[in-house]
Length: 292
Length: 320
Image 1 (cartoon, rainbow over the protein chains, first blue to last red):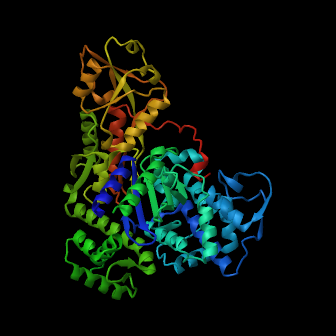
Image 2 (image 1 turned 90 degrees about the vertical axis):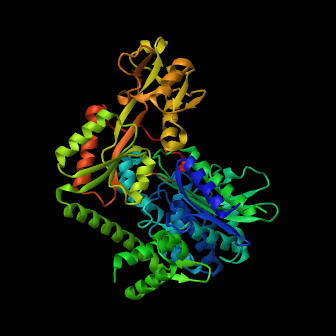
Image 3 (image 1 turned 30 degrees about the vertical axis):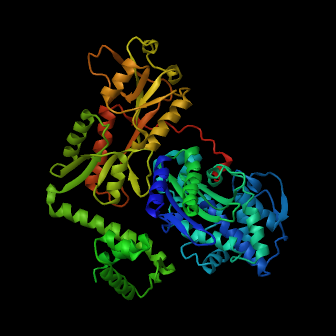
């Protein structure tokens, strides 16, 4: 299939799901690629936790920290969230690498901010720059990002997020004013992790293990309902935004980094078709890369 | 140096990541485009792109300047639009659009209301779907419109969102016609006549979700548009159609079909005036006000009811 035909199929799938989509997919080993709007800036939301994960392992490999180092997480002052440490009620003590596991497997916002405090926002941006991600930038932590949303949503709270007026003014949905990247930058990062270029093999394997333990079945993984295909990824979500970046591995050795970012027309919080199209689009892209 | 023209070139190359494609988009040849980018880099003293034989990537500095460049271009466009209206005095031109389901009565009230607010300004009114209007805003071919929600509101400013509650078109003699208001669940067993999904997938899904929420999941959806088609299916094949009171699904004196309001939290068409962020002026405001007023007075449209409870699920990842 030609690139134009693939792009047309991707756009049709996005339109059918009621979303605008940005995608880049690349064969991790050969570099063959497909994309739509792959170089446009997108809000990363929780996808930026992948950058935190890579930074943590890079610092560990450099000897700047020890992944088994213990961190204290008291109940007060936790970044809000519906999963992991963010949802727990009692004091917790755990290692940096287990914190990273919670951050990636269930998108734990408290775990992410704990790690960000340990490594620093600047280190995350330095890692991105070192790996050639010229358009990827973290401007704030996850608690701070949720804070801008609370401020912009006003007294209506989460309910106000269904109001299109509120959506137009959320800073967290404007790539110029929040954590951002491009689909191509994200596949570049995934490629570096999977080729052991981001960190030595031992640390690369640790990151790949954690990314393979993500629990969500509804986005990227839903496009590959095959027992012999391995999917590892990280989602990101904000009102109207649904993202996932990850790597799909086939038993013949083929491995493909895919980054899908979407924005729904609808402001509803529950939109199964919008989640599923991330898998559908990823499969269209991977099938195109695997075509003989 | 014509900074605006050079910035247009910069933004096009940044968005296309390719000199050839950017040149096609700008309607110019590639060599003069490359020269313009070089001149701009010299003028700003900043390298905007890294060029290799195969591809062009924006630099960190370029990324930092891209937002400013886009903003400046939008302001330049607003200035040109304003100048055009000032130059033409009160005979300036406002390019506006309405979606096709707005009734003739509403259109007439809107036009009359607009003239009262902004007499003399020429209104070029188009009938366009919401998708076409959004494309028109992006292409700078449209100043203001009346759109359907839900739609992607990125880069827009909105007037108040109004609801036109939907009712149901039933064959005369159907038991539900004896009710003053029909609960959605009472429509179980009927097929539903609805516009083709491709016309507006988000609006279509929103409507079917609202029906399901109300206890009505049609066994089949029959796709079609136009009052005649809907009427035919309602009369002959066990289907119902949904539409607002002012949609003229039933002509006066019709002996065969009946329109009834839906009970409870009925599904609705949701509309608002919309215009590109930063490009609203007095004329745009006058159109938005006239459209909002016309919908309220002629179509029984009303403000959004207080939002329903919202239960964020763990997969939403955010929490307020």
